[in-house]
Length: 414
Image 1 (cartoon, rainbow, N blue to C red):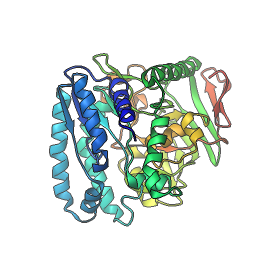
Image 2: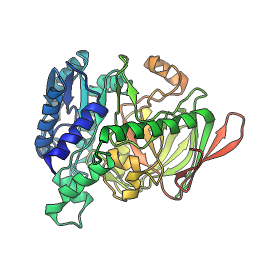
Image 3: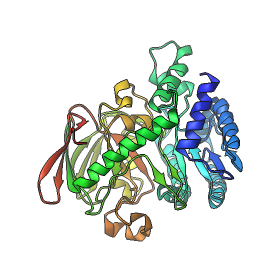
Image 4: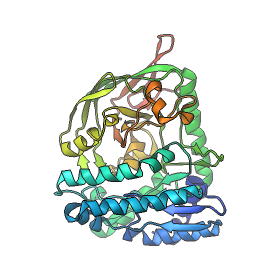
């Protein structure tokens, strides 16, 4: 990939994704989302651009997937836990200085193939528990953070197996930059326009002020209820200091939080889910009173079990997101095996922790969430349910029904 394209991508990440401020600390990589050896060139460019923008300090958390796999498979997990603790302390110390956080999710979808699922689950759980205070502040928009991806050979091999090996990484680069709206003459302006369109759609959904959604198609028959004061949002978050940032690049979704106990019926996934180096295919969940009472998968059942059985909150949903099948990412018709991209090609739901998207939700203490129908958990895992067969109908506050999506596309009014 040309250096000028990487520089443009880095500028987009820092100017739009993070809205990096002068004299701000930038952290690149944290938790299990470390910066891999194949990302050295891009990380160096990010560093240069950040300092050009006046950053106070750039912290890069280097890692290696092969080391991580072998350590989870054969290393002492207690020592790994201790390593997580001191890493989390440093990350949280930088947060007190107003740091901004950038991660480059690009994991090998088959990373833990053949590794004891119990060890993988244990490593994931202790990472989540240690980073939970940091994660809660991040999802509550207390500081700016953003995700965008950079290819690796193992990831490119999975996405483009039919291309010659030497062409796969370049093909993945092109796909990432296209989906991230980074290839145009003025990506910053393109993102400004894109954000405005998404927010307009969220505003239209908020004006409907509905109480329930009914999903049907592709094996799904699901009802989801919402808090009377829920709201939909898109693209932009804002810190308490008023700094606007884009947490996901790309993003094509509008999303909100469901009532914790208001989900009933069956939902089936329409795309594989890559979670923690394991692939889950044919995921199916059945809900009663909001709780997952049955779960199945054609493959990756142990990985699915590790998600659902994490804690009590992982038996409930935390997010509802709408994405049409004619989004630019969907129309590329590429299965990325990476949730950052696949969730923006498809309607999706998230198991676990909610974003507090009800009026006044940001100021609620966690022990007040339950009373307001918000779910809390160590996990937040998106899975894709969109397809050209999906229909979604809304039940309004007065009991009337209106279509929201037909055959996977928003109705004209949206």
